[in-house]
Amino acid sequence: MIIEGVSFSGIAVALLCILLLLSKKRKRHDDHYLILWLLVCITNLSYYAFSNFLPASLQSFGFTLPVLSVAMLYLYVISMTFNIQFRFTYILKHALFFIVYNFVFIMVSIFYEKIVFIDGIPYFSARGNNLLINALTLPMAVAPILYIIFSFLALKKYQKLLPEYYSTLEKINLNWMQYIILSLIILFFIVIGIISFGTKLNAIPINHIFKIVGAVQAIYISCIVFFSLRQSIVINQNISFTNENKEKTALPDDKLVGLSQNVLAYMADEKPYLNEELSLSVLSASLGLSTNQLSQIINQTLDTNFYKFVNAYRVEEVKCRLKNREYNRYSILGIAYECGFNSKSTFNKIFKEETGMTPSEYKRFSQTN
Image (cartoon, rainbow, N blue to C red; front, side, top):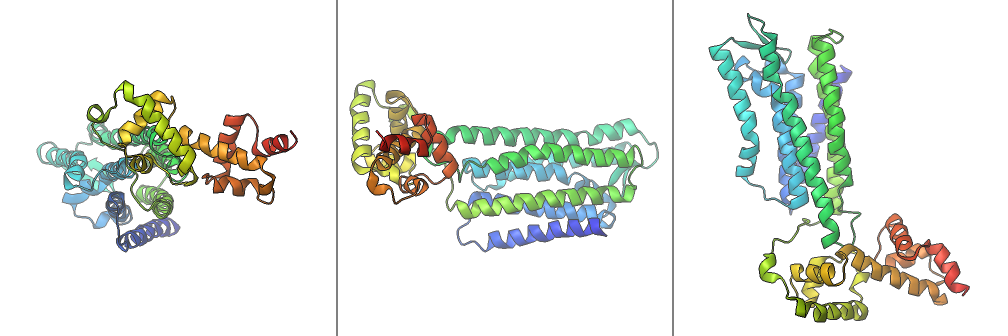
């Protein structure tokens, strides 16, 4: 009863999340993909709890739902990282394997031997060909691993691009999603272990196997829902990277030096780095340049990336204020926040990288010399 209760709580959490997302006035593309993934999860958990209520002809669709679930989770990940639009063609493309997989189950049942599902586990009704059943269920293991790898690679690519476009990364680096994707591997082995112990070693009653799997999945869903909703609150607009034609917007070498001086002068005079949300697109618009042109100036002429470029100015501003005794009544962290930083850990890390000292060490040194 406790196991079923955990599964039902997972369904309740997923439904609540869907209602909260539907109530948003301005939904992002990843919100729609999250809703879709949650609907698949609800269906999957319902199948684990009530598999015997599903008609025999539809049992394979319930059994293979994890393949569809992980595909929809991948769409959510790449929509959140690279802002892909919510399109039926994308959904169909990644649901195609799920459809074909079920078609194979149906064809084997028709032309070889009928496949029956007992408590959600497939068996041949007469011949008992375990080798063929194992071959049929192998994609249930392979497909999720591939999607986990694809999701992880998408996140790594996203995190690699962030310093080229944003000056503050804490709220948008999606480290939590990276940990969740990696934990999917652990979840995968837990599920495989549960199924193996139940079917091969008879250590778990057959009729409890998928109920336990459902409870584990419900806990996992709750974790993703929590972090997804928190991220949705933190980020009010989609994070996106430029798709400009680099060849058309690239600057000739003879113009780079002059424009780089304009950029440096603007940074010194206007101090846009004091805005913690300063991004490449915001700064490029202020300078009358394209994002690709500004990126070219920073990367080629100034030999750095946008993140390091902006935060170096923030550190210099902090240093100036720490030297000024008029700011002694302010805390070091308060000064850091006023200079564009929004995280104590990031500020301390960047400050030490730039100066070789901690902020407090620098303050004592500067005011005694």
